[in-house]
Length: 190
Image (cartoon, rainbow, N blue to C red; front, side, top):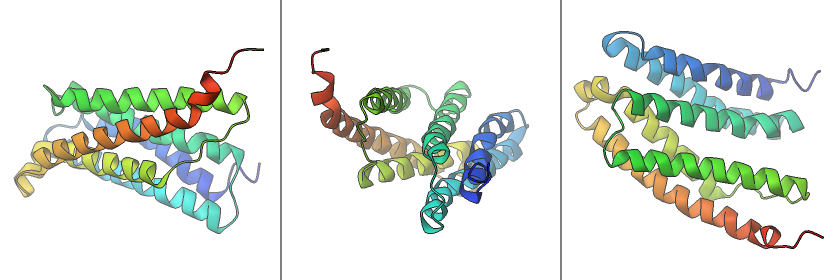
């Protein structure tokens, strides 16, 4: 019980709870809804750094945290992309960047689950951490959207460029994970 209530795990719980709040922010009229979404998203994104950092620094790493952290990340990214697509911020060709990101996240989750059954660990690479950072920054800019463009023209376009950058890095890191696990995937069942 003590591990479940450690500060790193509490930060992860807060990130999960922030996900529906980001989506609900889009029901608030005008620019206020956009800025609310950015604020909640930014707070949730910051917890992504601190939960892992504190867990390592305080030696509070746990199986629960290792399981929930990537789930929290994927929920935050996926729901944000869904909301941004639903409101038209992400559309046209940029929809493909979101599709690439979501497909990779689901693929890697399935691969990790399969490899875990075989007791094979695939560590998170430094590039995969950068991928997550680029995704979070891109989504933050896109959540600001038209409200952000009023403050700093080009915020939305910058978000779309970063989304495509994240999609390309996502493809590469997805291939990296596939390459690490392909040998296990091709073994005959015996």
